[in-house]
Length: 158
Image: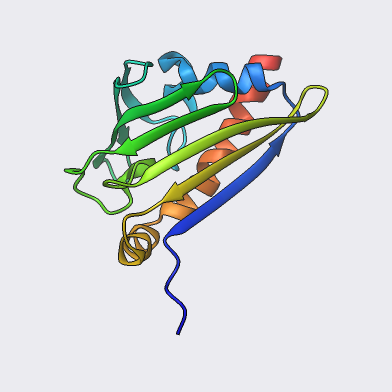
């Protein structure tokens, strides 16, 4: 029997230059507008955007609960790649985009003039961690988040 997967990759193409996508991934003002599956309901977005820097994004669910995305930046290669590690003490398996101890790599690949393919690749410690994260909405949450990202891009370009 083959081993269970412990990696998950989501991609979306945007009609925007990668420098613009990079900007809204690296600026807390912009991150606050799109991060999370609940729409723009983030109450705080504190980031120290450097290798070794931390980020903490607080999100309010439609039911009024608070959820947090907490992690550490492992690699930043402008404007190509951001790698972060989800905080080991995060209380939800989903981690609101930063599952506990999961390594997330975000790549920005320009495939034509002003068109970018954004990929979110998550490497979990164990297959069980990926299953638990998806049971709490990790894949559906990122799918919704990438839609929110598109709406934020449209507002910036208007």
